[in-house]
Image (cartoon, rainbow, N blue to C red):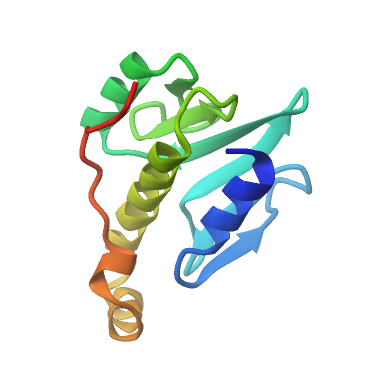
Length: 134
């Protein structure tokens, strides 16, 4: 997955908004004002931070050399993924879905309820299962 494909998938999530609170080089997709990812380039190589259940975060880091503890993030709950082609696109999409779901679950009840009324449950909540192709 390249930078543009990652950006398109991140922003395709229900009501995802593009923000740049850290300046133009760092895209921060948000849902209802809460970030669920970051996307930037370092030395021309795209890097993405995604929220992740701590149990899965460690396992993902063991499975892929390009997944490391979150750069500039809580290293227990965030992973940084170097988009160098070593993680299959399908797996990256599942990790994006998982990050988005974790953030939606933590929104205020009123915000979550509005989303749940407007969107199908499966669009908002996708669990990460470790069935990754290494």
